Length: 312
Image (cartoon, rainbow, N blue to C red; front, side, top):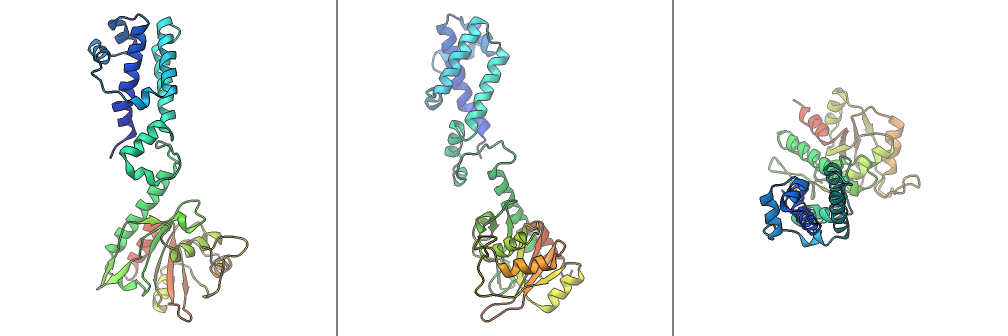
């Protein structure tokens, strides 16, 4: 794990300090004056002067870095710029280069995992897409841990397999929903999770969740379980509203949604019922279609806790 701050300390600051030391020496500063101006020791200035500090050519060749060093050097030499202003100006450039720019690209090089996130992003932004997607994946992992530790869960997995999903706050398509690739299956009484959660790998359960959201529900987590009338009754007695929907083998997205992930029969059933959250959806099957139960709640762990508490 490599933090972008480490790149600032290891690559950016030595390069800029070396450039500033050289600039000030060219302006007639003594080694002591350079040290005082930059707030570093004379021995450090000596190392910069003798090339004993590793610098980054990519940073030193950047036009913005060169321009800033010249401006700060001139300002410090004339007295027009204080050390505080010089510090602030450098900090501003650092933040700029961290936000989808030179330092951000360097960060991707040393942390290849970041390359999977398309487009520029500010790693410090609390609202960044990277942070949000990773929080959702982490939430699904927590939910999966609860399900794996629930002895009765394997017996609730339908023939088609289960999946635990959670969507982004502004989800509109299956690509915005994290789930288990390949689904969860009952293998000799044990719920088997084949791999780590990913986005865009569950069309079935994701479409149910997205359809419920189109119907006006704010739920973000869902899981599918086998259908059993006794299970539906147990969920109902536990206080969860239950909503039945009809299976339509030929259903397509309606004109209001425009998304093939949305299932109109579910949208209509949920809109009509207007259940409190969390709630349960179910269908009793059709020709070639296995009956299925869906539990929907605020997030994946909340869904998993409902399953855990069944028959406990």
